[in-house]
Image (tube, rainbow, N blue to C red):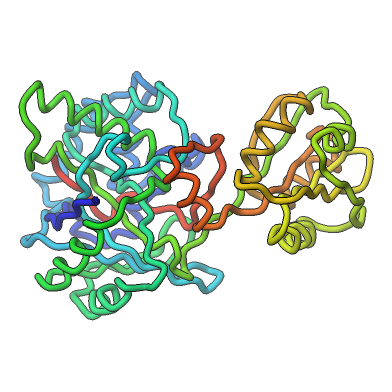
Length: 394
């Protein structure tokens, strides 16, 4: 199903560490201001000056051309896949590989989305892509390899040429290796040719590339043109180093009594220790999720509530959005940090907090393969893929 190809990346000729940045959509204005102090940081290309939809896209294109002419960026001599090994501060090791993935419309079943998108970011990224004619950032995809059949290829790749080492923006230690052996590339391509992939991070950029592809086709036939592929980072969702975190819900403003709303939806509620910290509440929640849909509700004027109901086929985040949030009211926002959310509720900044358990990879594949799209901010994949290790020219 998935068509993956080797390619010749454009890479920094100098040490990449100071030149890396996080994905464009997680960089705050303050973080951007810090990053642009480095004159060769990738953020000069991924987030050129100006507001979304009206950035100086021409400046980004001119700078990219300048960097190529001056040797700041140099294209690799041979086509290859790129093994990326990431070592996080908590001791996890995640291995994946960078290559070109053939673009496919969602209905074809080759590339599966799991979230909805918005028009604004897609227009912004399309204007940038038209200007720079490059994929400046890899999109993050998950494939299914429960039996670790590709692990020997990844291990073999680690014995290849070490192309770059760096510390990422979030402190993750990064090592980039060449996978150039024809047998290794063939093994990867053969394995993925039988499987779809799920978009983990990059839905807006993927749909941007579909639009760009259609523009470039201009009514012509499909082929192997550069516009038919996107720069992809592919990771086994079932690798021990992979992590899907929860993104928790916050309600501001006037909110209904959560106990009454939960009872009306068939949830049983139990009060938890009033002085428990965020980690303890998340651990308590985790113990309930094997046999039940469970949430922890953080109340401003009462102890945390553990809410449980018998598990059904739908995911807990779907149940929350469809059955509970409409009755609770308030204004919804999101927070990935349980303790920060708990502190906001206790300080009276937030009206109500709702802690969720992360979605398991098997459940994600089951639901997405059935054609469902989850509520936005249902997943947080960690670590984020840094921008600037490899660029792909169109």
